Length: 263
Image (cartoon, rainbow, N blue to C red; front, side, top):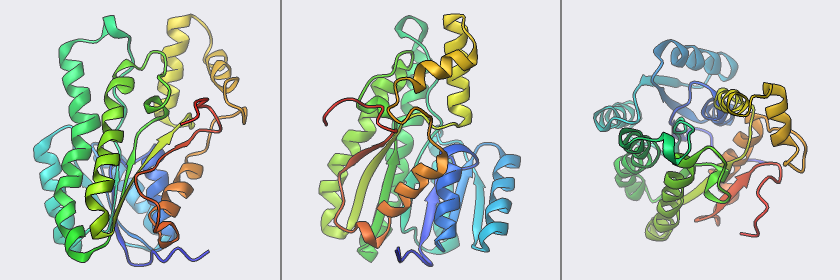
């Protein structure tokens, strides 16, 4: 299937590893030029080199902390200076730390809000003018299955990430006249560093092994396994392509059937 993505330009946030990296790799394989960002300079530059060696497509790594407004403003200026415009935006951020209500202080609420919701708001706000001007744009907000089914021990994610879904639905209405499509992808459990951290936390709290903690989760997944990051990346890549030109405002989980709800 031809996705018609050659020579498009994408900004993929938080993309030095995990799901963001998998998305960047898949887009690059389709001929999309990339701006990738993360806080860890060494890891980010290694990811950029790896992707370029695999695909030969331009990849520009820019170090930025997405919880900081000034960093995002700088990132957007640099990205637009490099390419003139950004066609595809993948918002993404490392999830807020685990914890229950009694564990979380005000500063953690504020940091979670800045990283999880406001990073998406600021990235989108900075790129919408260019997308409107060219009458073409694709925005994918990576969230979590916690927007559809709260996850035990992830209170911050359960509370803040649904705001990203509200943003997705609202913007899909406002931006449709400009041929800018906005969708959310809700990852379930994929074997990333983030999930490994959550498994270790779960094992510590419940005083069980990490293997037992993983089994407790996979027993709830109809496909009986965690996903591979590339499986999510395939869905994202389809949604930003011309093959999905009538899809906007959708909230799609990629979770092996984990979410049991109808909607």
